[in-house]
Image (cartoon, rainbow, N blue to C red; front, side, top):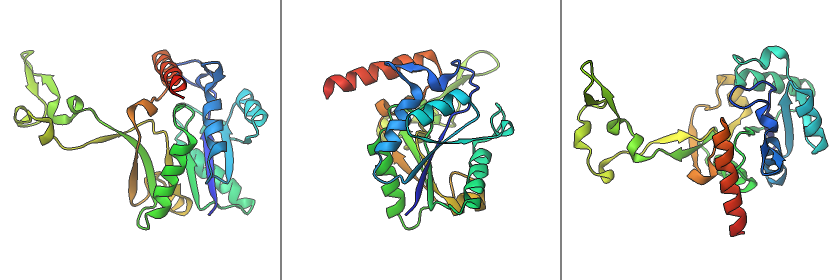
Length: 235
């Protein structure tokens, strides 16, 4: 089975200037995703999608194939799915049509090759699924029935009807949230037909909170650094 990894890295970023090259424990943020993709047992080809020359040069230095995307697909308002559809179209012209592609965003530096291969294996082994997304548990205190808002008088009211009745954690339903997402994987044919990373039947790949840091701010970089140091001490 041909499995292609896309690593998207446009030059513009809002929270952290040139975020994809931000220093994380002595290495650019991009390096963590490069290494995870290269160490995967199931990925056959890796492509860095970028509009930025520095990112492209750094990718090539690390043995990563580079595909430059048009400026129209690298703006703040451009959609990731449109950039991926563009690249798949260009690759198809070359005669390459991957069975599955996996999207690995550089903002998830704690996602490892083991996570990648576990997720891909889940998707491949599930005969009814055509897409997968990585998720994490939502803490019980953030569930809809626990949330409160202020009414017009400034008093607290439960947002969820009968929210006061949910007093035991055991009575609460289970909810999930994308963790970035660190991993999107989808059958290419389904993606091109539906225009969605979620296909027609998307299954979850549950990741631990400590592996799910999504870099958007300087504080996120600090948290990721602390977690990496902690994991290194354990190894």
